[in-house]
Length: 303
Ligand code: SAM
Image (cartoon, rainbow, N blue to C red; front, side, top):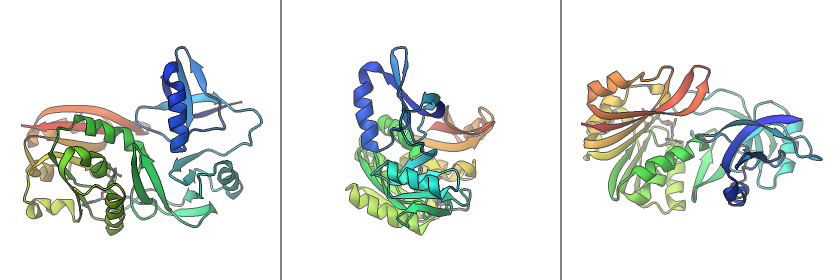
């Protein structure tokens, strides 16, 4: 029987290295067989990532059938409210401590959701390892998505040494801490006190001493911050262009803004960005969201 799952495609020569890395991250879906596709291998993984797509995999013979789920650190998140299935998931992998079922959609200013614990330890807290960084997360208390890990690396690779960076919607700090090694200073802002408390923990865990956590409303930053920034991260995709004027006031001439937005047409925000002073704008799809809608990132170099 074949099962649809996310797949990471790599050249055959990188197969073993990739397998080890995916096992290390705890995301290899061991219930499915690796797919051979010409000169490439496709590894089944439990999490969506930037740039990957879904494939049909054959099940490993003799394996207990494990219900579909997504993994965030030591937590598995099921799509069905299925306690028996949750117990099977928990038993299938020693790295898991809890299985959750989302009771609500992601909602509110803090972009959080509520969960029911279906199996394991009664917690929504866990630790996520991402490209050598360790992040304490609390899925019910503050927003976190592992799906942006490739995006964080992409922005990091664009940076020059000693940049002054502002993350306007920083959550528990994954962007801020990833960018910190190339920055002179990162100001990481969030409105959610729980996000800031987790961010402080993450700054300590990752020894990111040049990240300043700041509990504040991004609407008021220009009045509080004395700097103009080389690079600004804006990851609040549902807010559309509301916060863009503030970002343009805070960026230095020729600085860069990475503006993430949920869009339904190509070039949806281009006119507004140009009107505000965007000189060079590149638009990319980050991932699909629903039929006809996707997350886009606009990399904007300011004139
Ligand atoms: N950048 C983080 C990441 O990639 O994990 C978090 C992004 S999350 C989609 C958006 C964050 O913006 C939430 O943590 C929320 O609390 C915060 N937020 C919402 N409105 C805000 C505002 N007006 N000022 C500052 N932060 C805000």
